[in-house]
Length: 377
Ligand code: KG4
Ligand code: ZN
Image (cartoon, rainbow, N blue to C red; front, side):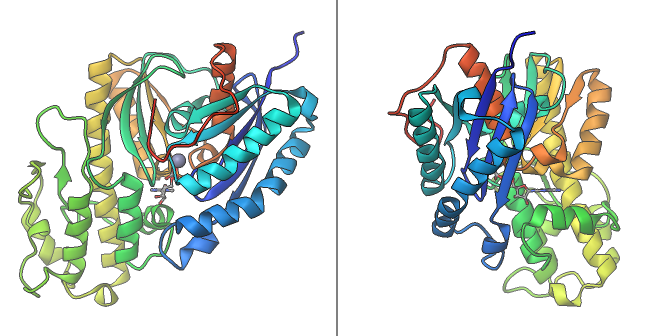
């Protein structure tokens, strides 16, 4: 039997310091994640300077733990893969320096990995290989995009958000609803007891067959629903009326005018909402975001002729989204591949897993590899 090819992965693009060892691109031997959520929670979002410092403090420990948990010696590692783009530049640099140091000391190949591509590879971890072509929906706190994928490395961008990312919308709406940070899991939980049809928030689908996204309108609609429209307290907010915003054409369906009746405290501030009303707003917001993501993925799957639908990124952990896409895959007759919840959020296993494919293809970097806040290749 041949020895497995082990790749060590390092991820530090945002607020998780993670190192992992993955065998043959699939089998996860270790995946250590040090989350900084507690450090950023009181600011309601990631503070870049705090993030970089926390990565510096955590990286050595996380690195050593990943090797120890995998029972792997440096000599067993075939390559070091690292997130080099996109992300917070100070944070990326910490992981990149750790990876370069290891690659130099161990005399191993260094492989720079695109974080977003790695999210699309996450469904293959501790699972079967992915069947291509695939349409991938990647939605996280920093990104919301659709790709055509012909292999783990061949990714063609089909569309992306023109304003907020889906996860960012979850985080901002959770802040409006006083549900805490990070907002995605909090809204997912709060929505469980709510009625997703209680408030008809706008679905911004953009023109015709667009594969781009826009989530800023729905965030504003929730804000107006909760606090009222500035300067016209008590008046019906535009975002609640179901009317298209001036910038984006929005699909209108369902009983838009029932809303104020079913939410007597609308416009009065979140402290006046009953727990039931709050759950209804959370569920209605979540339903609107999920609808948009589903419609766009359906469009992309048709355009690609996809055999597989791929889901990745932190928002892929959302229970309503997972259920809706299961249904969609059934309708389309394709396979849906979603990461296990532990591989939805940022993690180094997905970096090591994808790095393996670059190694096999001979696509390796050298010590001049640099980090980029936005995508370069
Ligand atoms: O992929 P990720 O860990 O980091 C980025 O690359 O941005 O994604 C984090 C995002 C956050 O916005 C968080 O609120 C969201 O994923 N998220 C969720 C859920 N779990 C995490 N959004 C909706 N529902 C969830 N269950
Ligand atoms: Zn991510």
